Each structure stands twice: as C-alpha cells, then as structure tokens.
Image (cartoon, rainbow, N blue to C red; front, side):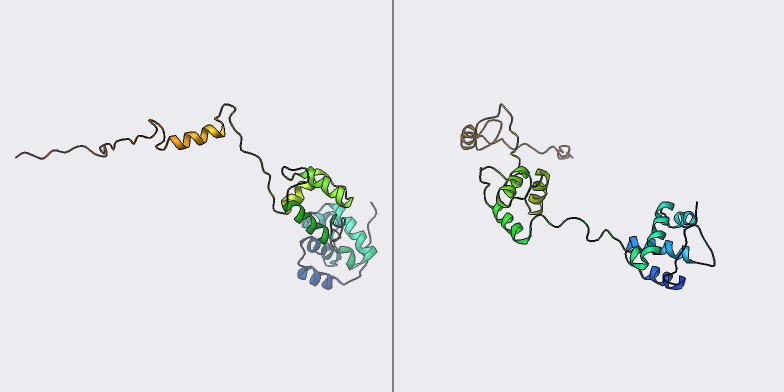
Length: 193
C-alpha cells in the first residue's frame, strides 16, 4: 500500500497545542491522531495511530487525506448544521400548540395521525404519524388511554346507588364492627398472695 504523504499546514508543536486546547470530543481525537502522525521524533503509521487513539486505520487514513486537502478546517466536526430545516417554523409551531390545546376537529383526543392530517390540511406539510406523536410529546401532551373496565363490572348508576346506600363498607354494609380486645400479649392475673 502506498504511503500517504503528510502536508505540514502546521508544525507538530502547534498541532499539539491545538490538540490540548480542543474541547470538542470528536475533534480532540482527530487532533490527537494528527499530532501523533506529525511527530518526527517517533514516526508512526496510520494503523499504529489508529490503535493508540481508538479509531480504525481507514478512519485515520481518511483523516490524513482530509488534512492534506483542507488543512485545519478539515478536522472540524462536519455533523454540525447538517440535516433539514424544521418542518414548522416558530409561527406555525405556535399555531399548532394553540390548536392542540382545543379539541380536534373530529372530536375525541389528539393522536399522532390526527396531528399529521391537521398539519397537512392546514399548511400542506406532509409528515408521518410518528412525527405527529413526537410533536404532541414536545407540546407536553401524553398518551390518554381510558382505564380498562371489567366486562362484568357494575354500571355507573349501580355504583352510585351502592355508594349512597352502603356507607360502612363490606361486610354487613352500614353496620360498624365491634372493637375486639387486644391480643398483643398474654393476659395477666393479679397474683394472690
């Protein structure tokens, strides 16, 4: 395999200072690898540097190529600022928050699919139902599921009637239970004497 040249955009001490001052964890590892490659007192191959810093040798070679082509800006974390812009701007987000504070147009409770349909109908923005759920969670709403009821449980009217007529609880409904003597210790009798 052909050896990749090292173009000295900075000296080894400058690279070391930058490595030690770097606070970003991803960039710090890259500067460390580059400093190890730049040292002339102890020359190392990209595979040796990869083992020291915990990267693959392919990643170190790619880092070295990027350094040769771009210089110090090539080591920055390029993940920042990537991705798409927000689907809803600040005004639309506020309008959505006001809309979910009210009942949905078809009644019931807000769900992820309902939010997706609302956003599509109102602004023409197509989102998946999962995104609708995420937006509901971000707006502070939680999943609302009615409490399960046993199929043979009493109807609401029967429960209300039971509560009114049965004040004392179960068993004997309405009667108070007599107090029993404490059984916390043995009974004692006065000593005769």
